[in-house]
Length: 394
Length: 129
Image 1 (cartoon, rainbow over the protein chains, first blue to last red):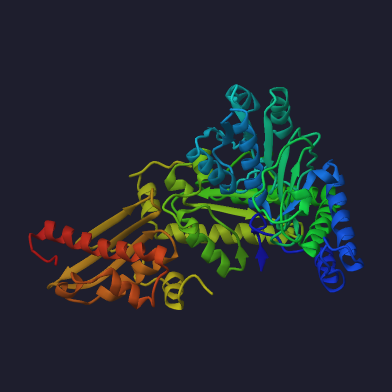
Image 2 (image 1 turned 120 degrees about the vertical axis):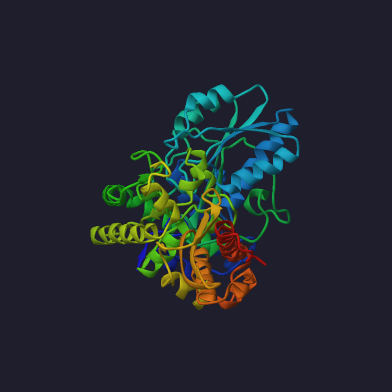
């Protein structure tokens, strides 16, 4: 089996599992309790906070533990919006290809009277900092732009955008769920005020994440009920999960130079191989992308069929086709980079992890080629394209 | 829990009657690429019976399986029966489809109706239900 859907979730690292299992057995106290059991848990919690803070260049007080990326995104955006509203600022800037945790939160704010500008992401899937600068108004309270896109993996010029926001005194949030643990992320260099991350994207456990909140930025609570997390997020902390997240992040960051060198080589080998399939094309910038992300569109086929047949061949991947999204529209990310519906339905995302081998990459290339050829053999669209009744797009 | 029944997966993995029927005298194409499903049915009708049928489909697993099953259900059948084929019959024959995939079976019914319409246009006969 070749698992190539690491952007969806990752397998927990052995070290993270060991941390979690051992803490579940030995440190099960409530960190808010004052006796030893509780204080031991508190110690584990605070050392995880310190470790994560050190890795991203923050101070421990600036880290709030949450249930994951979606909660972090929701809290960051709603907090900045509430702060803005108090000051009469109700304009938010974001992009057309954010994760739905961001886009749906913005939709909700629009209903509450906020105005949202979604910047174009261009054909290569990269935001232009000057377009962010041009979009900022007197009443802009927040800019929220993802660090790296979850479907096409393109890495955004976050430090440049952050510098612009700082200069214009606008809060800047980044959804770093796909970037954290995969590329260097430092909140000082990146000039961010708020940053979301999720453990299960970097070989940590599911249901755990964190929100970085720069000192001085006011948070609005999503969950009330206790003084945990500096009073900003009620609920007894998931101590084993949080500690395992710190273990996983430390491991990912320590191994990053080696991992990313290997992954980039494998990614580019995969891209070169898939480029041999006629009438297919890479989605997003070829180099400014996450080390493990490959995303292609193939003309004349539909993504879900492709996934099912690849699964039969032992390859697990994902697609931005409508059929896999449960709606009639294909991925908003692919539409945002200008792919037309016909082509966007035929997309394939392969997200690799560091244990991928050259042989496995070659197996993927061969299998995708076989399946695409097979599906095209009875696709009426492909027939029309081959008969010249329709023009090729790719 | 698998997304699809074993029947659906069987018809998806080993679609029956796939391809083009060169001597078809009734052809129906429905759906559009924008929505991600196109189904094309080729029927050869003789003596008011579907003597042969083939299909081509661009679409998801259930679209391919629905096309395949629909061809099986009408092959060798008199037009009086073929014109009565419903999406419900296709779905039942497949041991069910997930709710958000039911439109695939509707598309199969519509593709057959479109082919019958084409046959009516070509021959002037009235066969549709």
